[in-house]
Length: 406
Image 1 (spheres, rainbow, N blue to C red):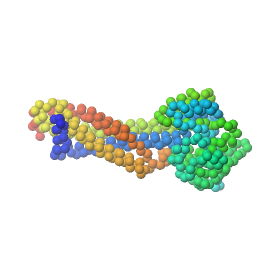
Image 2 (image 1 turned 180 degrees about the horizontal axis):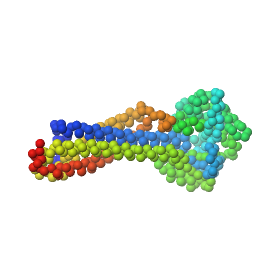
Image 3 (image 1 turned 60 degrees about the horizontal axis):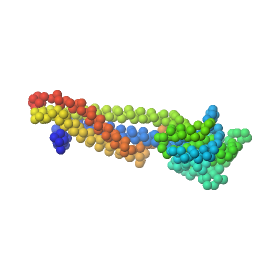
Image 4 (image 1 turned 60 degrees about the vertical axis):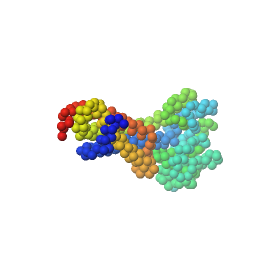
């Protein structure tokens, strides 16, 4: 153990002085609360971004391939892609799933109620993994029986509640075209995505229904949804898809297709940065105040050490190590508080939200070990570096005056 460590241990763990005790406790509490808030801020923002991104990805995929034209209606212009091109696209790096879809506007008539909706048709290749997580009741469409699949449909909880429908019920859906057509559907599942714009408008059915209603040729679709393995590379993957689909078609990443949602998510990063800076500033100010009080309280000791030949830097190291012990204790308490509250929310969903405004009914939390370690290390290093400046106060203390200091 070095001389500085020995003295710092005595000051920290065996000191009986009480003058600086209150300021030290305030500093420790400041670091504890600051770190806890930083951990929770990062975890909540990551949770928000992850949850909302997964909702959008689960419904629309990561990349959307459409016909590039001036059609501004909900029903995209039809097109077809050669099977060889589809095989090539499916083998591109980072592509995990690719499936067709088509949409058609219609009107549901049930229980003396009418509701305008958009039928989104999918086929047997559709990835149901996310929809199975958001099912309130029932199951997804079973494409093993192509005849039954044409009658099966999924509706949202919003539509089900509004029209007093449940799994097992059936209804007529009218499609406004010439001539007017109608189809009877059986409800096999009810989902709750949590995005109002989707829940109040979309029902999910078999793409062959849309193709027959529109009299499309076999293989003609309204678009393709592509899912990627690594979302961070979604924009690069969209460019790769664009390079291989030929003229007249365009591939959009969901960050382009839903710019408002992803711009809002990017603003959350700015809020987090502001919170981190403010909390770190509070912790630093508290530690500077505590360190100055500790130094002033130890003026006699500083004078004696200087008289015995100790250098200014040697004495500074004593107080910096003392500060490191206090910061470490504050970080320990901050981790317990921050991680504890985070895990509590993960398992209980105690803190709730208005789903209509935030796309989810509870505050999402995503704790990552790397984030926690970086916040701890960053707080410790930055605080110690900043404390070097106020610790230079020891160089201004004269040994003769300090020894007689009362």
